[in-house]
Image 1 (cartoon, rainbow over the protein chains, first blue to last red):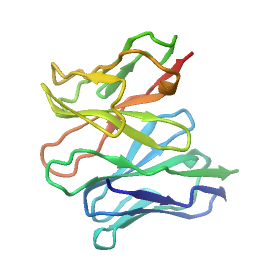
Image 2 (cartoon, rainbow over the protein chains, first blue to last red):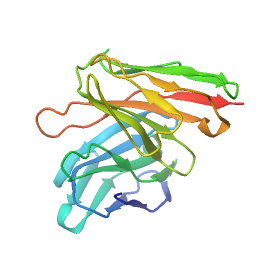
Image 3 (cartoon, rainbow over the protein chains, first blue to last red):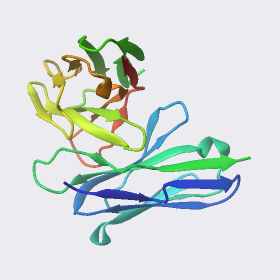
Image 4 (cartoon, one colour):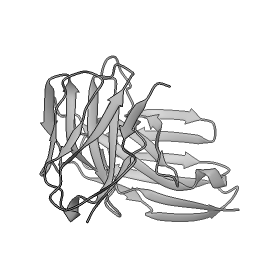
Length: 111
Length: 114
């Protein structure tokens, strides 16, 4: 099956810093999503971004489908950004309905 | 409020017991799925459904059954609980119509099998 690798696995930053999280995937995809899991365990969909660039406030994401990677940018980090960020992809194979998750990047923002 | 509702939030089972985790969505989404989350392993797909009456296996289906009799409900059944099934379980749904669909997750069920 498709492989999804996220880096770095852990990231500790001071409040106000910027960060870049990376997601590499091993096959062509027609669905790529970024999620934030907050410290209470809730999973929140940040972006649906199989290609191109999107921005939502301090967060933005870019997917370069031809090179099989996606980046999540967080600017001016706040303590509420802490948690685990997951990338999830669905292969382009017709009829393949399985969304595969990476193992996540754990982000800790220090006041 | 629109969304995905999971019950119960917490459950402790004895080895060999059976139970059903409930999942309901009120967004008329076609696609529903169940994941389990274990430390250091991210989320792994157990079963999924692309519509009422249609289900299929994911990455880790053994020990679990599902059914989809209505669009709204997608229960997950543990047939004979084992300690290896101790995990946090998430249900998700998405709208497959049109383009650009994202997933909505429930708040999770934390299951402990002793």
